[in-house]
Image (spheres, rainbow, N blue to C red):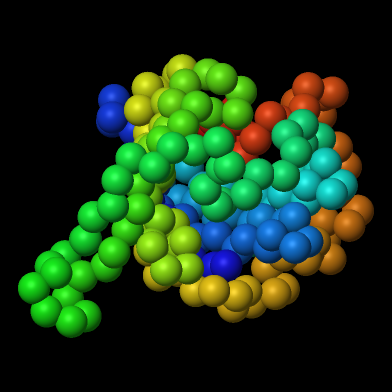
Length: 189
């Protein structure tokens, strides 16, 4: 799947916009994000290769790249098996055909047991609409998905760029592995 998203923290420390490429079969994900964190401009371009337990932090304009360990196992954008159905609703209007979108909301506990989440997906196709979850540093975080396309619109986005093939492990992170994309995002800025 390919699409775009926004992220906002309730404490207003972070606002961002991004694009994603998600390959469930190959267990690869690329995220490009632009925004503000603690009133500072940020950009992130990360290629996460879960089979290799590696993440590449990409600086395309300068043709630079570093890589580091990725601690987490693959996580699906789908509804977790242990989630509980919170309810079903129509976004928009149910007054006429094509005026609304039928969605299901699900709740559960984060895999690391650090908090809870609520995710909303379309009834047909299980396409992500939004996810709200808790993270210790920022509290509640809202992620909204849009312009979703089933399929990879540009498969090259999930390939390691040529200039990254000679990338060295990030010296500033040493042997401390990244736990997930969000932790990478916060540590880099």
